Length: 69
Image (cartoon, rainbow, N blue to C red; front, side, top):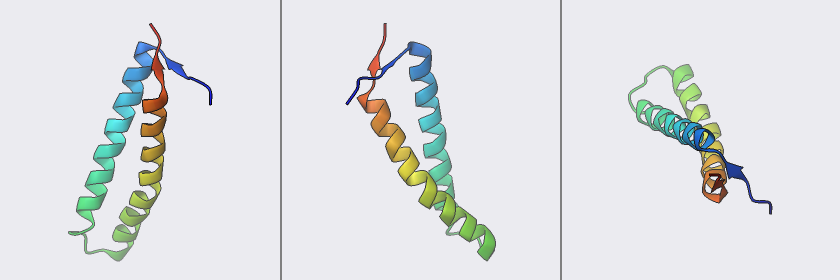
């Protein structure tokens, strides 16, 4: 496996994106319990199903990257 090096600004952007996706995922999960519209609930469930593996993959990439000075 190759070693990916990230510059400081890339590391910061990666971190911001992971935080945004985590917040979005939590909001979707919490909203499922209070939404009464079936179409909206289905959309929230789809968002959770698609975001969870994407977020897991991004965190794995982030952890495996090295900081370039």
